View 1 (cartoon, rainbow, N blue to C red):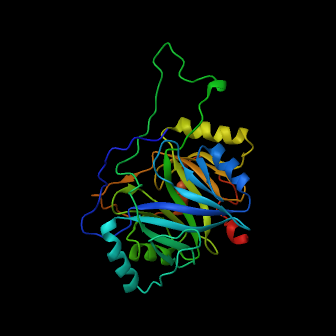
View 2: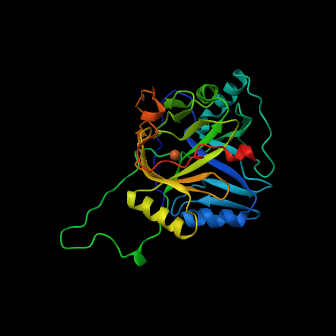
View 3: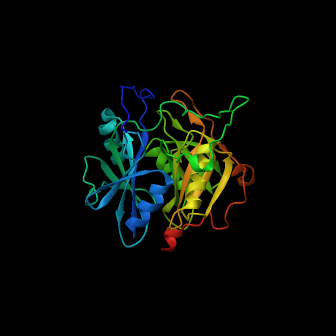
Length: 319
Ligand SMILES: [Fe+2]
């Protein structure tokens, strides 16, 4: 069912230039059927269009990304959304900071501005509706009244359907240089970091604690795509369903410190992860969040099982 959309005025910080949303991603995979099986079971709505999939969430108007076929799995580009009347200012800014503009990749022709990030990952800035949330997403803990059963029977367990793309974590060879790039070029702000190992950045027009996170590795690559759900029960049900379908490797259930979200990560067929995420911190349009540098041992996760040994490995770089 398609969500009925009334007009909601997006939140916007007056006078300042910055992207408002992580608009979409394109993931290249060597096996389209494997991608459909993994992301479909995860709860996403993959719609076949010619030779690619459009990635949607049930009931949401936005297309969060595309999946195309190639010789090896890789994140090929990210598109960031801007307000229409900021387009010329962004174009000027790219010129001022000496960013070379590129042609759109074949099959992704657009009116956007295309360029590389410091790791050589292709980025686009495009005019788009604000798909990042304008307020903190709802989160619920329900308790059954006395005299009634709170849980459905196992056979009646509902499927988890993520509500929206929450964020992406990508690898970079140089976290401080990347922070500077995303601040100067895209107008993102640092939310929190752990030294030069990982950083979390938010949009100035109202966004979650992070719409992009950057982790240190040898080179670029996708660590995870994070998908928002509304309850811890949704996280558990999603993880259980994935395990039932053979996707047993992952990490969770746990709670992060930076972002505060409850999580469970499921490993995809190529070594990246899809994250079920609930109740992530929100940074409203009028909030100047105080970024801090946190020691890793005090900020990676509040509670949860020990993460897999290779959780932070960039399998994409290994080829
Ligand atoms: Fe995440």
